[in-house]
Length: 160
Image 1: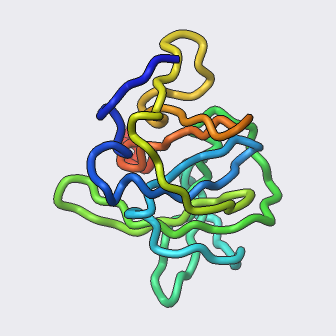
Image 2: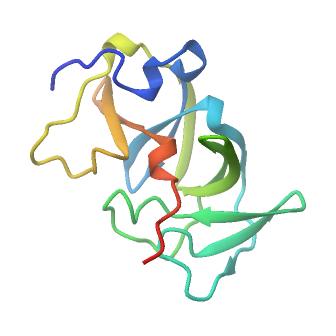
């Protein structure tokens, strides 16, 4: 892997250099804390008829109806029908529009500082993760942390 300075959302400003590390299907994923609204325990969810596999449920977060997404689908990970982990509630801005959504996480680990100079690019060929959703990686000990691009990962799907 080669270094890719300033090519990630994590390198744009100091607020994005702090990340929440979560685990999904055993993979460590980083989300800029500037997008994290809160982390909650699992709550009842309502399946939405004919909804996409990416956002099949709605939940009630403090009186607001919020879509609950499963990033496994977009990150090419095995889908699990049992999730006893946590729910990460996020605020995402797409252009001038902002919206709140929630995502499933198997585990919420910690908040860390990301050194933009330590961000490595993913291989162009053979990477199991779509490059439009994962902007790079960071090594911490024996762990590889994938840096998510929230604006692209959570962008609503275009209607067919």
